[in-house]
Length: 207
Ligand SMILES: [Zn+2]
Ligand SMILES: [Zn+2]
Image (cartoon, rainbow, N blue to C red; front, top):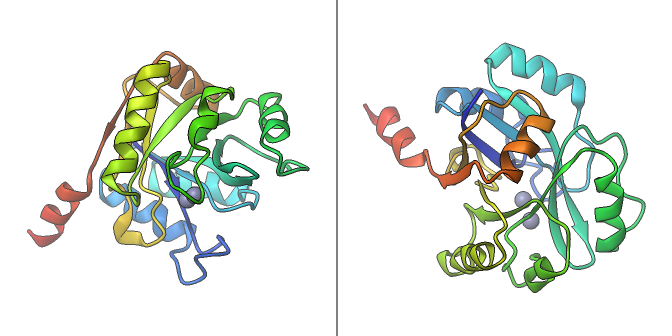
């Protein structure tokens, strides 16, 4: 399916989000607001593959398994069927670990002072740079600038920790995508743009 994907979402499985939504609630809302798909990217915890598959069927949306991995230089979004976490927080070894596993690697909120990998983007093999729904306009502008300079594709993710944040920033995929391999191909060929669905959601909820 092509369409709108929120590639950065957190459920209550994230250590910093115990009062957050369940994955089922995220999937339901994603379907309600018209997203084609989402990635569940809880912090440093393996995705529950079986649950994601059954929710994908139940709500008729694509659900990519993912993880937001903490490295010694900042946060990395890894999208794909991870079966184990990287053995070290060293960013070089995290990236070489992911490289062998058909995983899409995104620099999450790269210019967040505390949790972004910042200028390390220049030295590291990543697939995409994120525009983030919970970060300041200025840091997202910086992300766009470096993506443009280095010709690295941009993707969007809401980084939603609460259900009403879902879809604030999303990725439009211009090619048909069914699998993580399709997703990687689509991103690698720059067939993406960054968009938002939140305003449309608010409108439709109030009507
Ligand atoms: Zn983060
Ligand atoms: Zn996050």
